[in-house]
Length: 74
Image 1 (cartoon, rainbow, N blue to C red):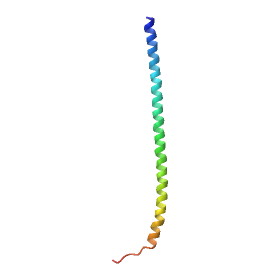
Image 2 (image 1 turned 120 degrees about the vertical axis):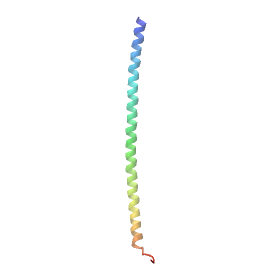
Image 3 (image 1 turned 60 degrees about the vertical axis):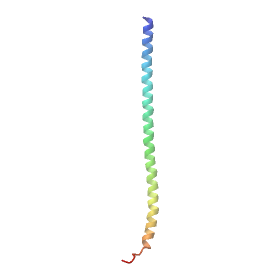
């Protein structure tokens, strides 16, 4: 009977350990997803800044081209 009680106690400890490890894995996965989301936001901000810079340069070029443009023969 004592042997069965010891095994049951070990089984309870294993179940508890399993639960703790499962929670650690879930927490790590949530942290990973949060980090991925933050990186996606940062990437979007960088792309937006690059696009604005590109468009500003293009705007200067387009304005220059339009100021020197003359319609061709109809």
